[in-house]
Structure formats: structure tokens, C-alpha cells
Picture 1 (cartoon, rainbow, N blue to C red):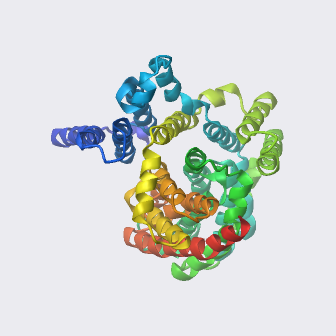
Picture 2 (cartoon, rainbow, N blue to C red):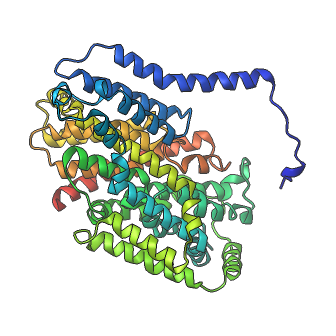
Picture 3 (cartoon, rainbow, N blue to C red):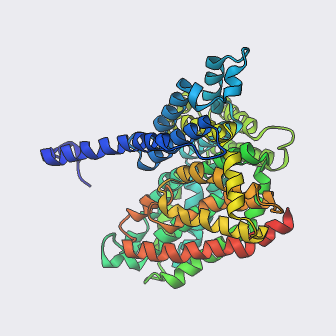
Amino acid sequence: MTDISKTTMVTPPVSKVSGGKKNRLMMMLMPILVAVILLLIPVPEGLQPHAWHFFAVFVGVIVGLIFEPLPGAVIGLTGVVVIALFSQWLLFSPAELADPKFKMAAQSFKWAVSGFGNSTVWLIFGAFMFAAGYDKTQFGRRLALILVKYLGRRSLTLGYAIAFADLLLAPFTPSNTARSGGTIYPIIANLPPLYGSKPNDPSARKIGSYLMWVAITAACITSSMFLSALAPNLLALGIVNSITGINISWGMWFFAFLPVGLLLLLTMPLLAYWLYPPEVKVNDEVPRWATAELAKLGKMSRHEILLLVFVCCALMMWIFAASFIEPAMAALLVVVLMLWTGVLNWNDITSNKPAWNTFAWFATLVALADGLSRTGFISWLGKEGAVMMGGISPGTATIVLLLAFYLLHYLFASTTAHTTALLPAMLTIGAAIPGINLQVFCLLMVTSLGVMGIITPYGTGPSPIYYGSGYLPTKDYWRLGTIFGALFLAALLFIGYPWMAMLF
């Protein structure tokens, strides 16, 4: 490895530096430019001016989330602050402003911070603390190594070990990026060299390419399988409730996707083994390496045992006690227990930058999505969408909208941006179609968020991690992404849709 302390820092040429500044400036101006252009466009017929102006700023925020000239939380907070400051023209109707008892400043602030009181946002925060417990106690690493120890002799069973490791971690890790980058990838990155498989080399196909592809597909499947396995899932939950009034519980989500999730998890390593076969089929070194790593960890610590008990209790409350205790409160209860028992300390909470960043980011996005509904833009969009889809049967409309929602993910490098930008529109159009099973429609939309991440090298958080590993060439990634993306979509349509329609 390179000794960083001895590495000479090379200053880039001035032209490159200035070019980088220009690109960043362009990315910063892009959201503002898009918002201003929309503000200058005449208000569509049937829509109040303040609703159109709110939508213009909202689109500017989405463009900012796509290009990310600044962190997502900064973009979202900027949008909320701008709307609150100019709420007279962006948030409130003339009827509200005409009411002498209406206090615009107080109501503007109340709306701006409303997302921070949203239970979904706190559930996301609590789940991030669970992930911190997995990392600190090394319980997540232990689970993955145990599976590799017993299933790692053959390449195919090693693929299943990776998939099952992700499955075990997913319900308690709301970030598939953290799950993959913090636990799964650091472990499997050690495996290809044991087979003589090197990155950016023809030997990558010995086994490294196969393992990396299995890992990213498993991450996408488990992200759809559990409500708490992907942060945008929780954001989608709040959007669904805000627009349709439908509450989707942890258990409802799980059972709705269960047949599709099980089928994909059980067949995906085998499909990858056939479509992208490793050259090495058997190796005895991997189980020995995993055994040695487990020996270094030693016996399960008290904190690992406590963490296991706590997360199982949280899971039970999410599934069976949602009517007695709010899921977010159950998560916070477990966080308090972890603090009192020493599994985590207060510094672990305050220093968890990803958790606080996501907390602020999603709180602003929830407020912005709620604002679309509050201003009347969503109801107007629903009426317009229903007119466009007039004469189409509810079943056909469901399939068409799901296909559009899924395939438009090619345009997004963030599942969060995709969810915030498109889900409100899709839900509104769906709700306006006579005869549609709205609960099933909502479940199809939200459970597609994880699996759609497979289609591109930038489709979900872990994608760049595995794409950048050196084991997945660009042409292979796009080819396999198309194949597996089509298979995942087909499973959702031909298995998930009938199952959900029967269940709900």
C-alpha cells in the first residue's frame, strides 16, 4: 500500500482547476436557472399561481439533488427556506392570506420545520443508529464471516453466502450504501485474491466479477424486501400517506414483496453463475481465511448479544405491535436501551454524520413533498393525468405507470431524487383512475425502488462501490443491468402484482 505521508501532493494545472470551478459553478446555477424558467412560464389552466410557483422551486430542488453541487441536505434546506421566506407567493392561497386571523410568518415557519416532526424521518434516524451498533460491535462482520466460512468452498455457495449476509443485515440497516460499503464489500474484497483473481485484469473473471455482481444484485433485492432496508423506502412511506392517506406498515410491505424477494434471492446467485460464470468453481482457502478472521473476533461479546436482542425486539414491534407503538418510537426505544446498556454511547450518536445528514435531508424533502399537496398542485396533476389516461382499464394503467416509474430511473443517480420527483406524480395520477386498487398500486410503486437500482452503474448507492471495484467492466455492467433489471421487473409484474392483488 502507498504510504500517504510520503506521497507528494501534485497541484493540478491551472486550466484544470479553473475548469473544475466553472463546472461546479454551472452545477450550482442549474437548479436556479430551471426554477426561474418555470417561474416565467404562464401558469397552466386550472392551477393557482402559488401552486405553480411552488412547483417551480420544487423542480429546482430536484435538479439540485440530481447534480449535487452541494450536499443533498443543503439543497433541501435551501428549498424549504426560500419557500418559507417567499411564502406569500409560493405557499399560501389568496383565501388564506385574506383571513385576518392568519399569521403568515408563524405558519411559514411551522411548515418549514414540519418534516422534522415526521415519524418516518425519526424511523430513518433510529435505523441508522442500529447500523452504528452493527458496526461498532462488529456483529455484522461476524454474520458475514460465518456464512463465508460454511458456504465459501464453492463459488456458487459463496454467492449465496453473500446474498444471505445482505439479507440478515438489511432489516436493520436503512442505507444499502452503508450496508455494502461498511460490511459486505470490505469482506468480499478480500476473497478474489485468494483465487488469484485481480481487479482490472483478465483474471477478474476467475471469481471477482461473479462475487461483485452477486453482491450488488443482492443489495438491490433486499432493499425492496424490507421497508427499513433503504432510506428512500421510508421517504416513500411518508409520501404515500401524505398523498393517498394509506398507511403501509413494516409487515404489510414485507409480505407484499415476500414471494418476489424470496424467488429472486434464491435464484439470483444461480442465474449469475450461468450468465456470468466464474472460471474457478472450488477453493478450500476461503473457508480457512474466514475461520481465521472469526478467531480474531473471538466469542460473541456482551454488546453483540444485547444488540441482537434489541434489534429482534424492534423487528417484532414493527411487525406485530404497530397498532400499540409507533414504529419510530419503537426504534427510539431501542436506541435508548443501547445507550443505557453501553452498546452505543452518546458520542456515537452525536458523531454519526451520515445519520444527521440523512435526518436533515429527508425532513426537508418530506416538507417539500407535503407542500405539493398543500398548494393543490397534486390534485390538479391527478385530474390532468386521469384525463390523459382516460379509457384505459385500471390494470393496464397500473402496469403502464409502473413501467414508466421503473424505466425513468435511467435518468436518476439517486433513488431519493427519483422518489421525490416522480412518486407524488405517479400516486396522484393513479389515485384519479376509477376502479384502481390504490393500495396495491402504492405497494407496487414503493417496492420497486430497491430493485430498479440494478439497471445502471449509478442507479443506487452501492452501485459505484462495486462498479469501481475493478471487477465489473462497463460493458458487462450495462449488459447484466439490462438483463437482471428486466428479470426483476418481470417478477414484480407477473408474480408481485397478482400476489398483492390477492393479498389486499
